[in-house]
Image (cartoon, rainbow, N blue to C red; front, side, top):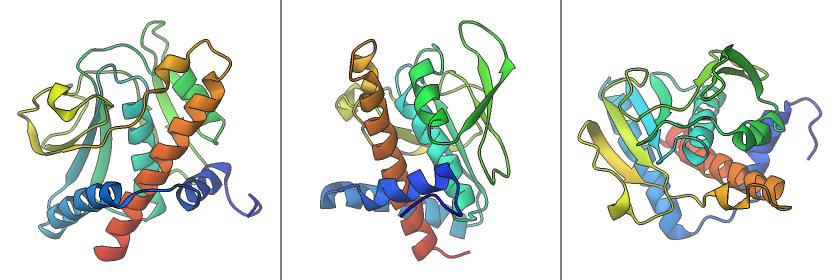
Length: 212
């Protein structure tokens, strides 16, 4: 496979799924999330997905970006993707870099040094993504929402989210430990690939089983 005739982002999205090994337990979790989203759509409800991790700087941001991309890739309607944390930090520069390397275009909408706001586009983008670090209960995130926690710690250590209509724990390994090391780029690429691949699996399952 090569990138001829397709965007770098789409190529990576497809490759991530085709090269990813997802065990049966993980597939069951992803399919359960898809089933819940599908049941909400069938009931005529808008679906807001809120990916939540402590600092809203790495895994939750990657999840939001790929969820938005997948929604447009599969031409799904009435789904919006957001992210948040229990603390506000910033959309980490290494997360920005690994996404830029896969075709996402970041423009600074607000040049706050501590927590810049990005407008994120890609080839074929219909609606740009608004990316910055915020709390999960920020007014920038739409309600009601499905909470998907991405922390690698045990589910019991994640915050109680009373606002969520449903909650799922979908942990990913944090690339933070590689910051400033020789394996930094490799670690962020691995996180980017896993999250892209699993989000692809989730939304492909949704599209295949809940055609609208």
